[in-house]
Length: 102
Image 1 (cartoon, rainbow, N blue to C red):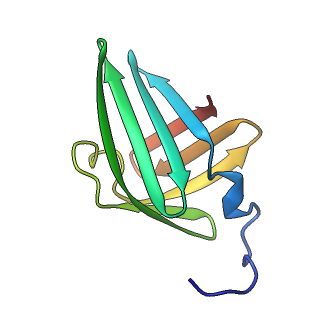
Image 2: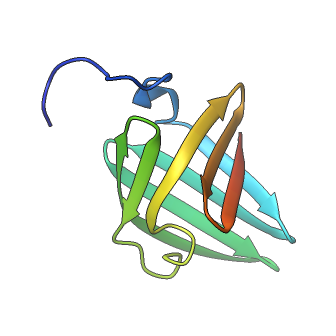
């Protein structure tokens, strides 16, 4: 990690880190916790919870996920991210994930 300022992003990375994010979609609940470069997720469908983890890097307005297993279909590659109030939106072509503060 290099020192220095936080570049041209409109939110500091700490604004999305250390928070339990929660998304409900199609009857499944996904949680996401970003902390110190490590991302932890759970996905609950029909009462069964699957946990996974990987790494992330934040650059300006993008988050890049790597190293996920069972949830790599959602958490892999780069997303544009936007933080508005209690809502974190991750978007890329063909996919939009909206998380709320849990």
